[in-house]
Length: 302
Length: 276
Image (cartoon, rainbow over all chains, first blue to last red; front, side, top):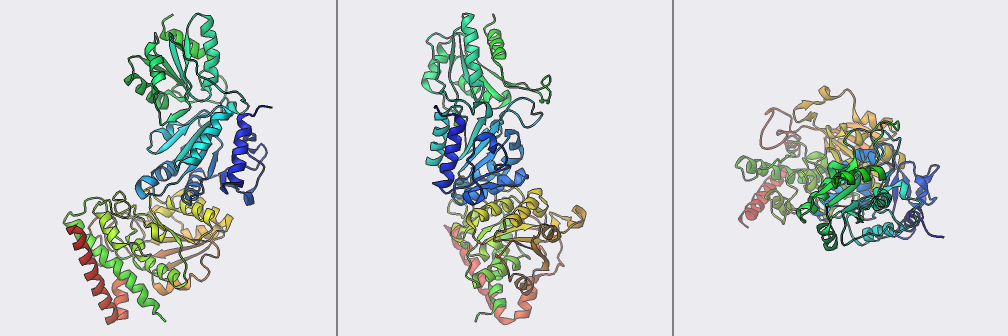
């Protein structure tokens, strides 16, 4: 049976605690659910460490463990909780090597979900970490991508922000780029929008619109690869960056870079610039296939 | 057997003379960035450093701004601190840390990132992971950061070998403690089940409260007096009690000659580093 993203995270965590002799910190880890089934059933004497509900302090605890060189995993169960968790991580761990020559590698599992989570907790918040130097941000949505993210973390000594999304946990499939020679538009989807981009592409294809899809795994550092640039430059109407964070963050930043390095306009579509409420009527969700289709139709002025 | 009071004085004297030179370097604008002098507060780190030295303990140490005395008391390189204050890459924090973010890898002294009190949760996490004796220094103002409370609580929950030291000079810049709060951090710590005391910075007072240190979490709120102003070369009050002068008077001629030796040592080292 094919492995899911959930299976891979669980096996990585088990390996990290048993073989790497590290620690995994987080809130409510050993409770029912084991954070969406991504954690092996291990306890404190095996390295699974329950922390307090005080998010800012917890971020500091993990930084302290990171300074001991044990490469801790830190599970932040809602990305919105990064508002409190991030200060000490990005102000200390990310700067430590540059100022003091002491690296502080931490594998931050930051988990997004969507729907009915209200004003803070839902969606992705990777833009919070993007503006600070010396952080690496990656958003794996497939089993191989997740393994790749962990392998990279282990081979380096940086702070890794893993922008996860619960909707990807059941996924067993790899997501490949679709690069056409003569696209009307190129989609650059991030995180969970990668799945919706695939649906949108189908709808648009049926309408006769040619769409390339270039998946954005690495958020930071962002490298505008030559074949991406080539695809964008050859496109008729430019590009569209999709994100499940607010547009005024990573998406705009990436689009800006793409525009500087190509002769095409690159648009953005992410969370709407408003606060999410709990009820579905007032929620603020990542771009659905329909929203993506409508945005593309607007861009190409059909 | 070494004279405890004298050994503490030697450390305090180095710190005092070092920061007296820094005071002058601030006045003549050799140093132009925010600098936090430990003058008046030296006996806290000097005493604790002597106690752990006597017990052959090599703790991990977490400090914040106003940490020159802590750095020097625990054996940080004088030359590297001078270089740091001169912004040289040979400084203890590669010339990036200034006065507030100093460190010494060889002595396990970790630098501070500038967020008030952040060293407390970091120290707790470090201690949890390493299980090594750990000391974290903070001011009475940093002790008000909410994450400090959670850190003390979690340290108690996990029963780790950490010593929280609050250098209580009563002032946040110039705002007195009574204006900022109506509680005491040692009482808060006791509420978490941590052994805690509110004491003076007299070396004997500190020593007698450290018997069980590192067997479990402990907090000392140590009352002290900052002789100079919050940052830079200034004096808020000329007439404050000075523990250093008091100890020198009690110890007598031996202390005076230690003072003079350190004065010369520090002067020479500064001169040399300025010439390079």
